[in-house]
Length: 255
Image (cartoon, rainbow, N blue to C red):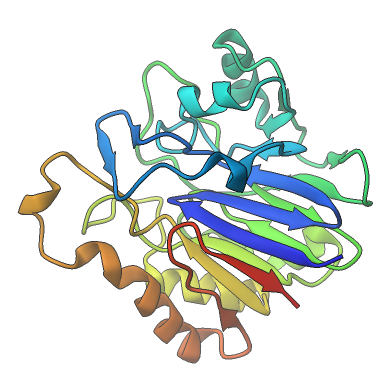
């Protein structure tokens, strides 16, 4: 059974591991509020029937309610305050995980737990502002999904929290504009994070997908720079890591 990862765009990733499918921060429709999406929405067959959904926080580009409603009553793991809000807004499968709780998937010896993240610079007045990352552990693969985060001290501790070395890091490397606010990683910071956690592979996300309505007035080419910049930064800051820079919708098999 071969593990695989597919990037749907922004922070939405399909992780097929040990016969189980996990979906992160699903953005499955054409747009996210006012933000415009480059290209078409992901094909349903690429993300259909996940066993579990991971939601890092409730910003609209990570917890898009229309996309979550498309998934039905699937377990949706997040922080406790976020889960209460999601259940109140039509996501019946939302589950709030405690800090040290491992969530077992129905088969394949796959488990998920929360890990720290730092993303408090843009609080929302009408949604909870709890943030989290996740580690996914299987017999053959350990994955860190950072969600949306800036640097934080516990990055060195992620392998300890996972109970095994990190095989795949899914890390944000940009945003939906050429400038990043606090609580984000740029390509160099993301490469440093990958080096700190010791991942042997890394998938850059949170780039090249969304832009504001006035995106045509922004510097040409800004949407395409972060992925290549991350791969280049890994050479210096995470030389033992293989960067997996994917196109929107592309899948890669994980050795």
